[in-house]
Image (cartoon, rainbow, N blue to C red):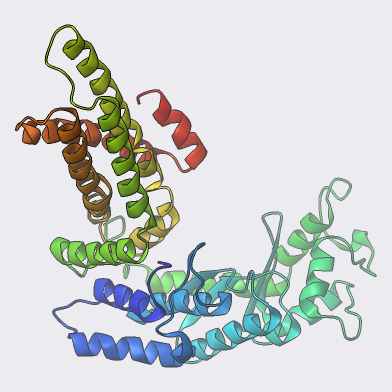
Length: 406
């Protein structure tokens, strides 16, 4: 989360993913310190990640922090999706060197990457090349050049092997061998990628990989249990509620612009309605007409004042999906975020709004009933906003859908 520092994000991960019955607070702090040292994050450990309004760490440091949150449990297998995308050449090289060191400590690192420079490519142990869904090569990275050389593709001197492989798969590099040398039934309709895929399936490299996979599969038969069962969480529901709720409170305190704006808006409209209907007379028919008009404006304000709640779940949808699928917390725990939004953005502004508007319109001592009514109207409106926010992923679509029920 952008409002938390690097250390705080790592602590959030370690608190939810390590069993508190087996790991003390000191053990968790030591684990976080170790990961910060391994990832080289000492200089930015207390720097906030950053948001669109808050300047934070660099792109490389953000990537390393994300990797660190996954290393909390010391996994044997780590999947990464384009860890160097959006980074400059030097930072990307630093990230790959980090992953290379982790792989040498007994971990298996699997990731996708586009056009790596040579210093990055030289770190690869295993290489898989794909094009249009077809497997073009899978095997040792050091043998890839010789494999394509045997197919008649020659890499020019000083050319980056990764760029050369892209030229081959995209059809920009021409083979010196005749196409009739490939045993393919439909040579007329095949393109370059299909031809390379068929060539790989007919190669000894492919047969060797298949034999290795068959050997591994036979070794795992009967040894894998619990398939289809949902994994248990290492922490209890209430423990997760405390950690996730604490993060939400900290996020609200460090990003109070929405709360301030909501409070200022309610004060402004309370004064506006109070001035328009100041000291409503008790004589008929003016009293009835004025109160009907006042109630109309009050209801409109209570309902449409909750439009800001539409973006509550939309902004953090990707974050929630990642953390929930990674086993950080239960889905039900995340919805405690509703309470973190209701108190500062809904309940407190309504209390102030009701106190100002009621006493300006009519100084009668039944303000608790008035406040309760306004609160229930506002909660009904914000409930609809939460429903729409949890149902769609686009803020523009949410605004369209919420207009009709409002």
